[in-house]
Image 1: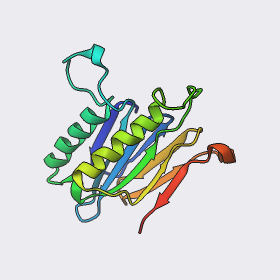
Image 2: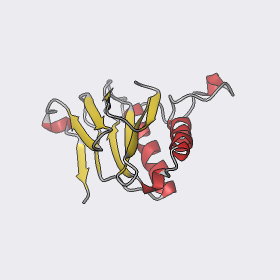
Image 3: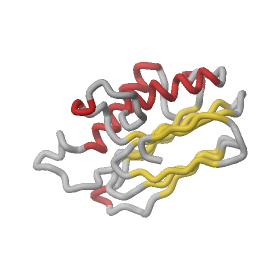
Length: 161
């Protein structure tokens, strides 16, 4: 579901596969509602102009996710949050910088989290291999998995209690 998001309740699970894209997962344990937001780019591509919003860029996807959460009487600020993705899936440039969409996606997600006062319960970002993420909406359980990466491309893993 690249460029898409879901926030709600139910017995189903949500699953996505990430490369350079980033996903934020939210779960509100008291209300038992949650969601997943998967975006492809840190910000809207200028050539798209002022067309209708979509969930392909971090700024628009996260704003849309907040609106849907509010319809469920939930603020994302009160949700447990997980951050995933942002791998370096292509050939890095000379400096590995400006064209590293994965890194720029990570930075956009982290900047948004800082701006709203959220800290991830866990995050797995970077690396070079795809990452599969699952959210069980019935229990609020979040799982992620990827093929072990070579040591030189090991992802950054942070877990907070």
